[in-house]
Length: 363
Image (cartoon, rainbow, N blue to C red):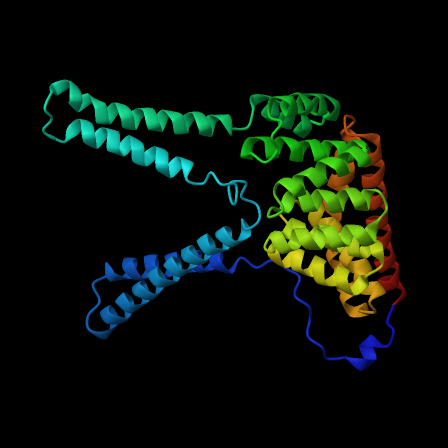
């Protein structure tokens, strides 16, 4: 596992794989500084002490505002490639509707002279009619109720009912390029892939890409379907396109790292999985899997020290691994293939932890 790497680079810096919420920490620290400084001003200090407290309060307020701006900017960047409305040609509908409603109110309230009292009703009615037409267009683009029922069934583990409902929703919204229908077809692709109908899932994923090549979802489903079919090399290409669309999405880098690991590209897997962890994986199980796969990629890349650090991290999360095993055992409604996959991954992680324990005992 060493390949001489430790001897060649004995003092190389540690690799950063943890997500650090700098912006949120700046907001908290700034608010605390400002609050403490303002509270201290109630003691009525004199001279330079009072000036210093005002400076600290201003610095704290600036730090909090800067952190808030950074949070907003980060959230905006993280949504790149994920907005269904972006590039769909209908972004103007809501602003135009609000503008027409505002004009209707103004034309009804402002005392504009008309030759006849009846004519004064014409402009507000025309503006209201235009707003109503736009609202009808917005509602026609909305996600059907059947989709939400399918999504609830999927989250409850009833995949068969979810697939039946989503197919019904597809009939209701056949035009996948619209915002409401695109989400329906995306859920259909996920359900087909997870049920093992990979050829059908690939067809739906290809249609998603054809409808909206600017979005992350279709490329991600293409890659995940190819990965499930055993074509890891081609899956990497599709998932790389998904990362290009959503470069700030941790899940995108995680999927790419998993595919590169499956394809035997250890260096590429290290790069993608480290990026996913730095961006922050919110799900505990996904975080565990990413750390384990990164341990394996470190081992294959000859990064022995990093691999040992990763196993030690996994060992400190044995409680999370145990909770995961208990959840899998209790979830009898999950598809059998998924349960077997989860049980195999849990066993692999437990073996890695046990191997590290044996190595520590031998030393």
